[in-house]
Image 1 (cartoon, protein in one colour):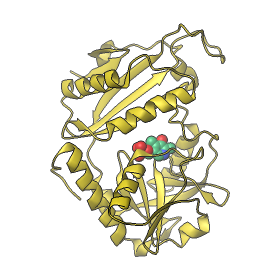
Image 2 (cartoon, rainbow, N blue to C red):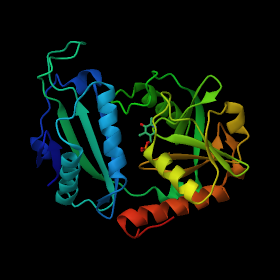
Image 3 (cartoon, rainbow, N blue to C red):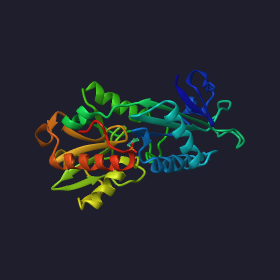
Image 4 (cartoon, rainbow, N blue to C red):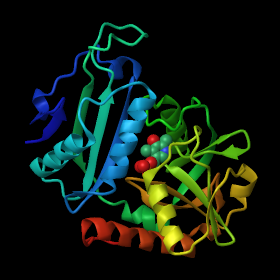
Length: 288
Ligand SMILES: *Cc1c(COP(=O)(O)O)cnc(C)c1O
């Protein structure tokens, strides 16, 4: 039996019903999070739940549960579903209300749902690296909100996948922004460079964790915008996300990066990141 969270209750998945006029369904009017579970424990859940609240506030949705309550629900869900290695998906919408672009009256309750999934670590791709493709970033100007509106991201991802790539590297004109569901980092002469956490990208928690790790290990980490020309001359390129962790990009637009194999600094970052996971969630059975 599989359980889900629906508006403060943990119920069987087949009993969970959302109305056709849920504003998430009709407008993408809501926000979400994906949190990693290792050894049955959530990784960086405080950061994810803080960002969840921030995204919700940015679009005027007030959470009707505290962060502590949501955290407790998610832990119950993980336990009831016996998730060992996987993810928790959490989303909130502005609720169910007759279709109208303007917000419903403040009394309308939000819809908050969560479910879990078994997800392996993508060890093969982490070891060998993946291909990526440059794609114009056509998204809106509030990419800092983890919104349910993902059409721009989906179109970029689909184009990349159809070209045999794992991820799209989006750019606004000359400026590289981020992936379709990941942050993009380039390495040049031992320094990691990634787009500043402004309105043009989602401020990834994996990337931020990596930044903390780099500061502790005295590895230069710089947040500044960089161009397509710069990334095409990079020594190493990597992407970060909750599910992909730290993944080397070994080819961009058909051109090999670091001769098509993961670079030494990227490999070191992967090791340091695994150590961080183990610090929070205990020993990993499968390692890179
Ligand atoms: C979720 C997401 C990321 C990665 O964020 P993490 O917190 O590391 O999972 C990057 N870019 C976009 C567009 C995202 O939606």
